[in-house]
Length: 301
Image 1: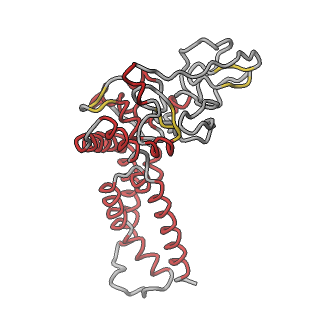
Image 2: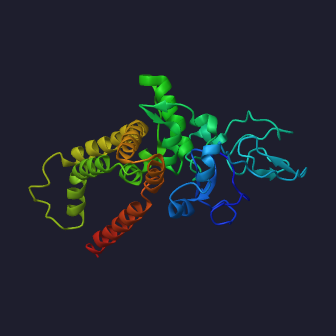
């Protein structure tokens, strides 16, 4: 990804910093604040596109007391081993070296909120008729991580395997965050069914049902263990299918947006407007979950 810190948004005139949500014009590369792009509805330099305009970052004065990241061009302490911005390995005297390997890529971590947050060369090509550039715009947060895995999946085919730790740890919440509604509902239903035996045992332990209740059938303890194992294997399955399922959703959504757009500008404006994960829905779900847990605890007080 390119580090836009210190660069100026041509729409509002304010500088970008580490907390800026940056949207990059897919045609000329001009960076905007996301809100500025949405307000304007198109690139601030749209009138220059017909002349082949390409945005270029302003040249910075050479500072021999810092090391420049070969990947994102961020300034780092002179003796830094890794870039503090993107995680690329910093070799001595690497101001002009562009062959660094991102530590974040090696670990498979999701990172960055820049759109698109990866170098132009990494955005080349397409999958199922949708360009990786458009995918990066639509994905928003962590686009570099997903585009990298989408390309791997396309190259490796059936041999592709990737363990998504976010899906493993948060299962339904991860799919909810990525706007995969059907998968979220399916996971909720399956988890609810699997948790029934354990809920019955807990209800008996807290005195909500009597020990001779027909719900406490012989062998329910074994069923509880089996359901716990099934729950664990469900998490593993979700971790392996998360990336392929998300890729299908991204491609499907982008094709739908393109088919409903009347022009190129309308297409990219809609793509940006609908980009990124569903943070609001996630936060509401977490609040509801915490509230329900407190209510559940108060039942036994």
